[in-house]
Length: 360
Image 1 (spheres, rainbow, N blue to C red):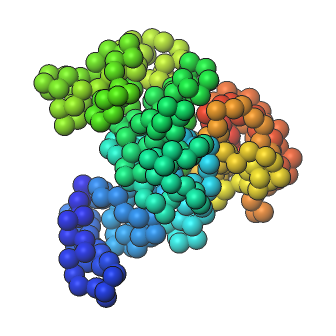
Image 2 (cartoon, one colour):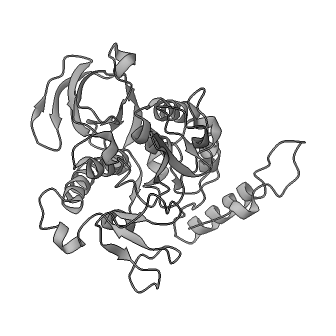
C-alpha cells in the first residue's frame, strides 16, 4: 500500500495551479521497484477522478475508486444519479482501466466538494428544501426541523431514515445496494468491519445521535475490535455468527453477492459502458444507473441500481454494439426478457439487478 498525498503539491507550479509533483514521479518509481521484486501495489490516497488515468499510467496496480464514490453515495441520498453517470462516462472517455480500481464503502468522511452539487444547491445551513447536499465532508438532509446528519461514514447502513416513510428494511437495502453495485463492476472489492457490523458512529451530531435501541459495536475504551479513533459506535446488525443464520441478514446476502462475483469473474472484466436508463431512454425516473462489462468468458454482465425509495420499472436501452440473444438474472437464475437492445427491468426500492447477457 502506497500513500503519497503528503508529497503532492511540493513542486512549484504556475500561479494558482496545483502541481502533483513529486508524488506522481515517486509513484512511478515505487511501482516499478515493487513490480521488479515480484510484488503488487495499491495506492491508498484518493485522487480526483480526472487524475485516475494519469495515476494508472504511472504503473500502480490498483488505485482507489473515486469515480463511483462519493457520487454513488450522493445518488443514494438524493435519488439524483446524474453525477454517477457523468463520472462513469468520463472515466471511459479518459481511458481509466476499471479492473485496476479498488472499490470500498466510505470509511471516513465523504470527499465531496461544491463542484459535485446540483446546480443551485446550497450548504445545509441554508436549509434549502428537497436538497441533500454533501458539505464539508458530511452528508446532510434537510427536514422540517432543520438539517440532520445522515452519515459522515463509516457506512450508510442507516443513511435512509424513518422520516422517508419507507419500510423497515430500507437501511439494509440501501447498504446492500452500494455494496452490490460496486461488487459487480470490474476491479477489487474492499469491505471493512464497519460494514459487517452495520456500524453507525456517534462522532459529531450529538443532537440527533443516541442509541436508537442499538447495542454498542465498540466502546471508546478500545476494548472491542474495529475501534475508529476511540469513538463509540452502534451496531445496526447482529453479530456475524448470528447474521449467517438469518436468511435476509446483511452477511447472508453479502455471501450470495461475493459468490456470484467470484463465479462470474467480474473482477477481471472490462467495463464497456452504460445502458441508457430513465429519462435517457424516454422514462421518468432519473435514479437508475446500469453498467455493462465483458466477462472473461466473453459473455456480458449488466448491473443496474435503483437509487430511489420507490419501486419502478425502467426500460433499458443497450449500447449500439451490444446485442443479446438471451438474458438471465444471476441472483435468481430466472430468464429476463430482452428484445434486441431493449430490456425492461423491474426494480425494487434501493434495489440492484445483476443480469448476464449472452450475445447473439
